[in-house]
Image: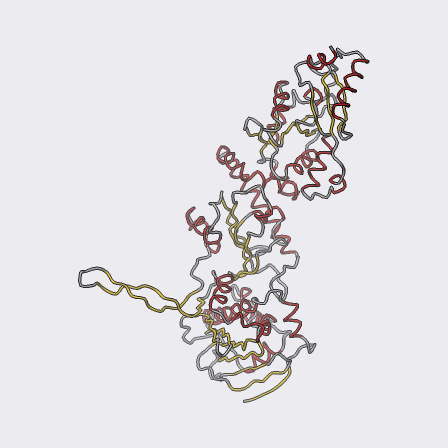
Length: 586
């Protein structure tokens, strides 16, 4: 048996396209080929379960090896193998996928949809690193003959009698000179660890040494000896495939430490498990958030059937949930030809909404179940909740019941509780409830004390995103305004329509203003003499609330660059009723 032919594709330059454009990271070839090999083992197992294969299965496994001298990398499996005719269909005709025929044949069998294509376009990623590729395969079918397929990276191929004696497939890559970095034990180990730590089928890469019992010495002490054993890549157990009822808190924390060995223990977690209208499993952890949001991103790992795909999950996970850590696994998330970039479709949108809903439900449950414990975690999760309320409308609708305001006395209130607390004394003449807040209690202590002397309460808004959160609250809360405690004098923070009498005459007011303008002599500072409570500070320097807020948001990249470029301007409020100011005129 010997045959030559041309691969059924529509363009002669498919391989340069594959090498340069379809795969942004050339290590992907190993992920694709090992995934294909693992699929082949699952297929033969499935056929045996359906009574379509009665032979000896043996221990199903995938084996990766390399030969530095011959410049080859080999991916072997003992799955269902292929006949020469199947090679022509699955390898030569790129438009076909092994899964199409397989699932059609067994469409009434349970879980048939879990079987993905034996060889799709992903197989051709082999040519990213290879001068030519060889397949040696023997089908599980009775009387099947071994077959070989050889291609040099052009559209021409050769099929001939193969040399394989046992069921399965060997894919042999003859590595090109530009890719010899992959002919390295450490490099290959690193890639396999990255993608296949949780693979369902046993994956072996060479050998490693292990210490085993070797009896006792003359003094009765135990002896050990080193032996060569298979180097199994996927020893870790994927807890997201287990039922939550089977797992303890220690199991979840241990798994978290395997994923993120240098992180503190998580605060809590959510176990995801849904099979309709899409299939998704996973565990999402709430980490202890620091104030630098950006550093915390890209900590969620996306898997497809326990094979790592990417940690760039922004198309699946809502923006604010990127702060979480953990694992999501779904065969229903569509991937492009490289399996590296996600395509937005209806399933992705449903998954996005589902995850948002589950996170909100978990937080609400924790709040209702043990509010005291929830409040102790608020300093860690408050940033996350606020971020979610700002960026996701559906999350806001649920989070408004468990989001907390914290005041300068470190007391926590729900949004409804806080409004009830302050509305009696902090309502202005127009009926607006005024929430006062500080971004730096130490620096703004004088302003806080002035406000509290008037019976006002002051909130802490000192996280990175609070400038955005303040604006969000004003949009959402009816008849409510938020003002920074240092945006005006205490008497003017909440305008109740009450007027203080001036003790200074009009001429004295003008004189005081001129004295301060001359002393300050800076155009950015506007001096005003006001009739304030004699017990208030003699001089107060403030920045307009709106202008300061816009500049804060611009500094965070909130799209207010126009305001960010404007020069700072301040108001210098002189308390004309203070005795020190009066002494200046004496």
